[in-house]
Length: 216
Image 1 (cartoon, helix red, strand yellow):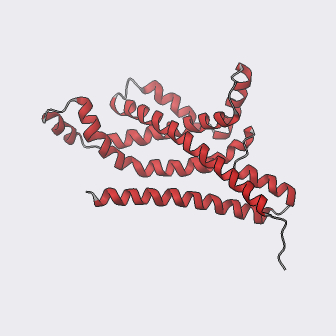
Image 2: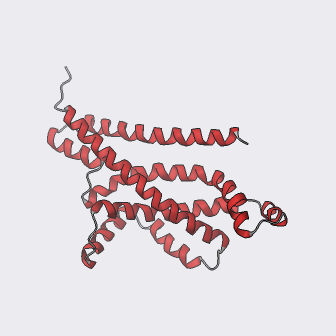
């Protein structure tokens, strides 16, 4: 007969960890999206002038995220920066997301046909009006699937923040496993919670895409 020491308090502990995971994902995606949008426009519209920026962003895309967490957390202590581990997690994940979202935005902007932009300018639109009313709406539809995949990837990457002391979902599950010694059950429950969170995000994204298609 199946028996377990897993209790309702353990489930609440996991859910609290999941809430931390969602907060980390939300703030890092906000930071990454805003910075990535700005950087992506620079890379698309001023490719030569923004080449040094591309080299810097390549560093954040190439260096494993765990190393970035450890290094930033160490530098924070060295320079005496008084910010919480949660803030460190949001900043590192945000910069990491920005490095990827920059290329997503760049690809979306470059996917807009040049003839469309030339036609808008011939109708009297200024550069900023063309960018706001023509380029960005069209680029958004191209870039959205990549952005959605980035959100799901960042949500899973939040598991690495446990190395700097943040109790998110995976760290919470490991704490429970250490206490009750039932890794299969606990990790299955944690995996189910990850799946539900990812499913909600994916379904919301799919619904938004369908609305765009219906309005075409």
